[in-house]
Length: 254
Image (cartoon, rainbow, N blue to C red; front, side, top):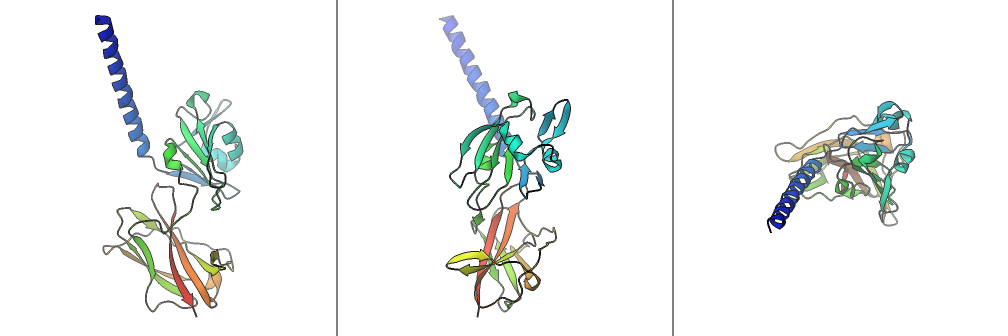
């Protein structure tokens, strides 16, 4: 009887210890943020929540730098991982790295290589798989408490002033990026730019009244707009989130 009780107590201790370890691990990955990233030659953005080492022979490299200088390709990288799922979004694939492989460090992690019908082809790497599941789809007007409107009296064929209202509990950052889309055959299609577009790398936040006002002059990028239905599209995200959310406001040129 004493032996049985002792075994039971050991089992309780083991379960408790495991639960505590899992709890600590969950707490650790819940706080993950995408703070590292690089864009490779084919235009894909590689985003990581932590610095992943890459052991090549006797060399200790880092994965993001190795992608950038061509030491390893995304395809070579994923071929060394375990493919665990393919999403029904056009073909985005999820992979798992097992730390026992000793190629990319001593931490298990997950990778999603996007190939979605939304046109996203980026790659995301994190220790928490759930953090990756929404990264391959475009998010449009999905943020509660966030909206964009055109300031009355400012709309012309060349420009407009937009007012972003943000009463969410998020710390959203808004940049200078925008694009103009036109409704054609009941679908939104981006206008063909007249030239390569460049935007200053500046981040704005809403003020004390939860609003942000931005002037947009699209003449150099798109010219004067013809009659039709259009919308302005801008993006926002939280630092480290890794997901881009798009805001839109529709208008008509007559």
